[in-house]
Length: 323
Image 1 (cartoon, rainbow, N blue to C red):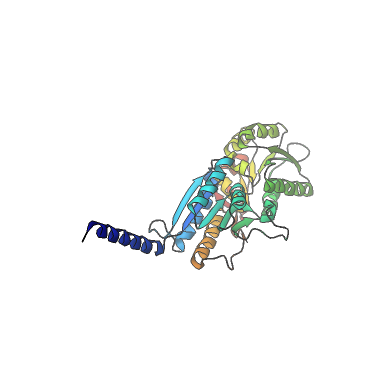
Image 2: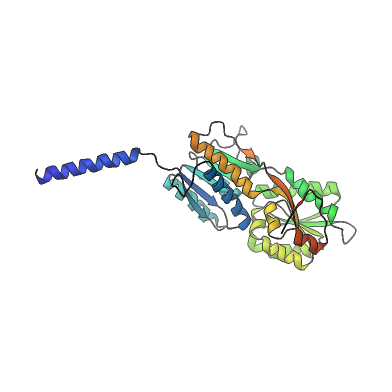
């Protein structure tokens, strides 16, 4: 057999082998993006991955590949991450926190997006003229209804230093859901006869200065609302409030583990798990038929036992003590 014929047969065999490999079923690839590094937010990712594993999609056995990236709070980096996932042609995108979800929606039109730790689509201002969210958006969102319960416990437990109870909060004026939360809290505060002192903040770098400004207004308590800036700067907020003997309440159960006094809010691990179960269903059936954007199913009342003791606060039996 001459050399040319050998080479021809080799090339033919290689192409046939490559063709067979291309027809083999490969494991689905999930691109997971977080907007910033945060211990509380990370619980949602843990729940998401666990739900996939429980449905048979495990990284350990190669039945799924999960590419994880974190933007570390940098918007241009967040955009680059989403563009990278587009280049990699991932089968599914998972987004944690509002900024990640909005960035993905703006750039991704074909790949399914499964959001978590994000508000309802209408609060992200992403509905079309007919009031519908993007066709490729799935996952789990949150409403503002639970904030009422979180805030309402403050006047039941905290005694005002002056003639009226004063509660402080900060909000990121660049985030629609943060502004919505502030307005909801303001309406409830008026109803409860509480004076709300709310100051805007542009980034976590401003949190200490703004928190100190609120404390100088002699607030009786601080309310940490569902805001990405609050999550990222929570230790700074907590430290300043503790130094002035001001208890911190919140609507986010994860922040109670980090030192807030109490919360009635979403369990972030379960939030991610719920979104992960949806994503697994999508991967199994190969499309989004019958899958709709859901609201968080698991909320819980929790209080930090050490913080409660520090401020001399007694919680009802409906609240679970954590340390």
